[in-house]
Image (cartoon, rainbow, N blue to C red; front, side, top):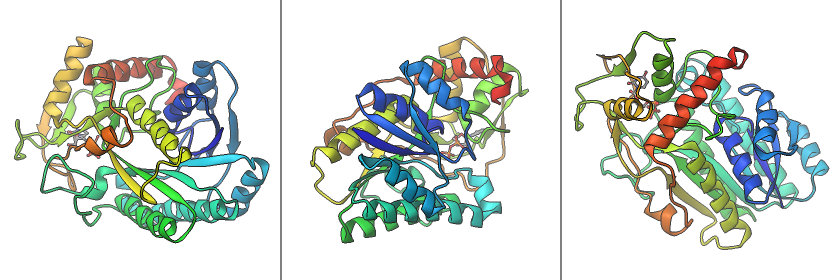
Length: 342
Ligand code: UDP
């Protein structure tokens, strides 16, 4: 069964492509290569041991999308990852984010309607919850005003998808990721770094590698267990597998609402200092750190209630924080040995 994967050469997309193939699906991978490397295609093929179908497509060009669906008339569902996702950049260049993330989604929906394709899994984020009052946060928590244009595009896309699903023959599962980390256990795919990292774990691994003198920890005076911010870190392969559960639910007609939302996390709040300790325990490498000023726009604490995904999607995490740290470090070593990848 053919499943279209948009942004399939990106971080979570590439891991999902591997899991789709493991589960017996045939992914049609599209990417405009603006934020990813074509080499990821060969790396996926190395893991799965066979060629994959890849098309370089610009989703903001509707004609290219129509041609894609004409070429593959037997696509049965879509997983939509393609989006710009650098929070800081979205603040300085909001139009780039609104244009790309919204137009690509609108084009996708219009073409899905035209070609009568119903199931869509959307890559959303816990950023829609902002700084939640009640923890762990469940799917009924109020949506907060977004702190960045990037976050706003996730919220806006959810609204667009919901309204479209309610009015048309389309079904959507929106997966709200907490903090995906780590890499495939083979170290063949992971998160490529084009310049400075955007997330905590690559900063930790780059510090371990000696690329950075120290890790800066943004704030030690938050109202948390040790004063540092708390997040819900989840292994990227567990995130990828949730997409297979979502696709299964849709193609087996088990959807009960036309727009369903699920939190994807480990369900555990982990502080930045605990992350440093977890890395040190998993690898035996000491991380030099310095507690600095708070980072603007940071949320104090957010972690998921994953009951809904556990019970209804029949999905649960299989990997531990130690697994994620070990895989993140092995991936960093892979990047180190292939400097052309950075
Ligand atoms: N963080 C940090 N130093 C860094 C990068 C991140 O202390 O160099 C902290 C950040 O303040 C936040 C947590 O690590 O509390 C996770 O940050 P990340 O950017 O990975 O995810 P997000 O804030 O989007 O949840």
